[in-house]
Length: 193
Length: 405
Image: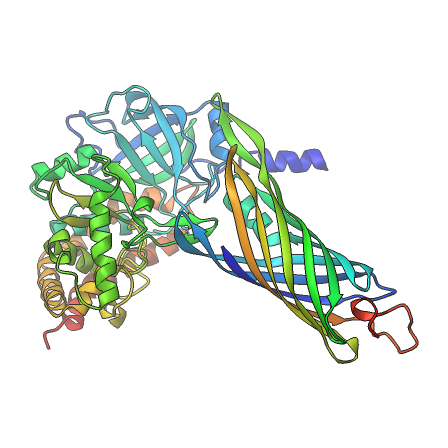
């Protein structure tokens, strides 16, 4: 499965440590050997800045939660949690890399002994990401291009299956807070300024 | 508040009861009484609370569908314990407490057929306001000498609750194949029948068409499991033809074009936009033993609307790959055009307006008074007028669109 993800977010800086944004994924996925369309359009992303060069990125997809609840008897809430670091490659470029968990929490309605029962379902996968990030002029914006891949196991109706997902991510962040030259607390990419 | 919300969520809505439109029981000889256009059957399903809860959990794309045990009575005759499940996907699926589509597996638990029938399909008509489109479309395919289902009407009661009027469809199974062979529509009844309905990959619809790598997605419904060897032969020829830009020689013998071309024409005659020709969707594939492949229709409730028969897109190289390939081949395209003109004449010679009036007379009270119906009587009457208009002009449209150069 390969998808292109676009993330638009308001980037926070001190004293605002949390950024909020939206992600949209479109692309195609493999369905029983045949390419099928895939779209997750309403993904909420929160980026918690731990330091100028590190953050924890949390993502929850509303599209999958809504449609799996309405259209199937196996509702799922997909969650992505990544520990994200940036290593400076120059004054405006940085190497971005991240690792974490790609989860889906949910349950399946199944029939056991001719009665309806609910069993846990979802997925557990590790996810890694590598890419390049570039800071805009005067630190007002940044964009990045990275490849994220997940590998793990998905459970549906009690049956395990391999879960693989590869995503090309394009991120665009716009800062809500503009640091001044006197603001010593903000050092982009971890201290090259 | 939480208790109130729980009650609201769990309580089945009370739709009340509509008019009793079913006819008194008749002698049950054969199965013609069931697929009659002169009477409406009464069907009763009794489900225990556990079975109801299972069906209540079904959603449009739930897979696989759960089948429960139910006691069924048809036209006053006890069938016994049968398999009951909901049908349909994104377009026609409705929840258990609304007006779902049903499939009754009559011999699932008893192993005994009901007057030769293995199964029955009850279609809810939620995309067919007049409740005439599906019945007339199947009749049209049959009138053209193509394999299609017989139909009838039924008023359904589930645990004594009135579920309203349904279109009763002959399920396409081994007995259906046998009937067609006896009537001379098919040469043999023991071939392989595959379902070509669309799939849902996650929740994205995936039109299923012939092509390399797709054979495993077709479900074998009747016949012998040969690992889709017959389908694979056609798929390979189709993919090779598409790639080369000209027909693979084997395509001429692997596909029964004398049957497939009239099928494509009739999809236009009935104007089904959710069909093999357009989507591709709602078709079945049949291989006679050692013979060529043919197609037959299923779920034609979106007929007589959407894309007019005069729309030039019916002649464009889009939709089902067999249609595309046929239009790319000079001889096949010419055969398609002449078949369209011939069938337009042949269908015009039949009294479709009278058939529509008779079916409307039979179904009007049940459809208009359906307690779970999604349409007002005015909308249904408007739809009857639209179908009538279609039947009045479709022959001329076909002759014009497929006119000789």
